[in-house]
Image 1: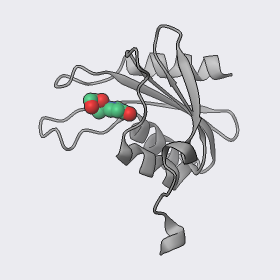
Image 2: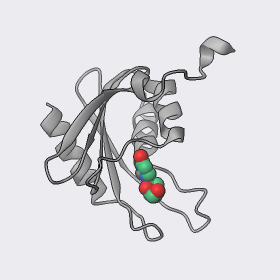
Image 3: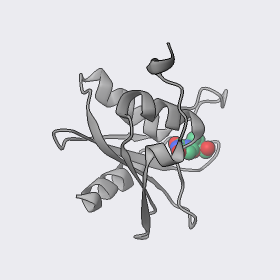
Image 4: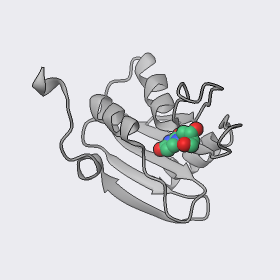
Length: 128
Ligand code: THU
């Protein structure tokens, strides 16, 4: 199953719109029923309005009514496997909680983390 999730992220990465950074990222988010929701980074000429692949995947799924997730795979073509940025860690925590995160590259390397280990003291609804 991890292989299928990584393959979906590799395919999603092909759609990355990254004319400024040239850094293409794909994400694949598995929901609690096993369905896969994908995303890629979409850049903007203002730079700051760029949206990362992970947030695109989450927003696509949430906007379709999905509320429960198991795992996410993030793929970039780097030797040191690319982790989610800080904004995406906060975003993933909000919608997915302590899910499993697989970082991978298209050359067959991967490593698996829990979000809690990447983002140990999140701000969330429990503080409101
Ligand atoms: N990017 C992602 O899509 N996800 C990450 O986890 C790291 C960074 C994108 C944002 C921008 O389009 C490009 O990679 C370079 O930062």
